[in-house]
Image (cartoon, rainbow, N blue to C red):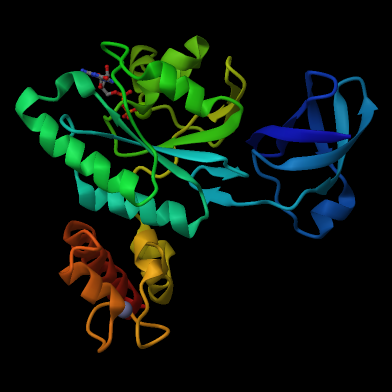
Length: 294
Ligand SMILES: Nc1nc2c(ncn2[C@@H]2O[C@H](COP(=O)(O)OP(=O)(O)O)[C@@H](O)[C@H]2O)c(=O)[nH]1
Ligand SMILES: [Mg+2]
Ligand SMILES: [Zn+2]
């Protein structure tokens, strides 16, 4: 029988059995432990029922991807939440998060939340950013928890998938989760302040059942751009997806100073948005610096 790992904390593994519509405790077989196999939330596993609420885990299915932070396997969608104001939009941060998503093979969707805070005179600027990201193949949604704008589209987009929210702190990730899943509010910063326990620190990763279908991780994925730490310098050139269609003289071209670079030629002809190329150069330098430090 197949099961989905929905919670991992220390030695405890909870498994959702779609056929039985219930959650059981998962006990990894000795063989798996000996092989040093790690089990992640989001893993699909082969199980055998050994007690009313217990299942032995015989095998872990191959993963299509693995998000490192929080550790969640088989992510269908990474939703990168940003805002135009409070906090102010940074295309440098967004491009870094998109490159991280590419590196870990996570299909990314961009959500501009807090649309209610966008001034009328800023709308054309915001729309041109949105067109840019749509033109390179990232879906973009505009939402507001305050007015309800775009929430139906957001729920529709999250439906039936295993979704992780990512993005800078303060953009509204917890608010989105709470609006979707009312009893998820245990996880917000406000609640932990109220209980006086300070910041909620937990090693548990739990997938919450999306009432429209599918699952949502209860803690956000990357909030910072750790790209320079994670990515080998030579893989950076393929993480800006619109660069891939241009040919360079050298196979391993870094698109920085090599002769015959098709990417730089495309930037000059505005076939690649110069703003994207600028952030590429920034992340290239940052990654190079980390690599040189060893
Ligand atoms: N005006 C406005 N405020 C929002 C919206 N979404 C969230 N907020 C507020 O922004 C603050 C940060 O939200 P939170 O969900 O904690 O952000 P997180 O750090 O990404 O989880 C909170 O005070 C929310 O009430 C929105 O669409 N519009
Ligand atoms: Mg939060
Ligand atoms: Zn090049």
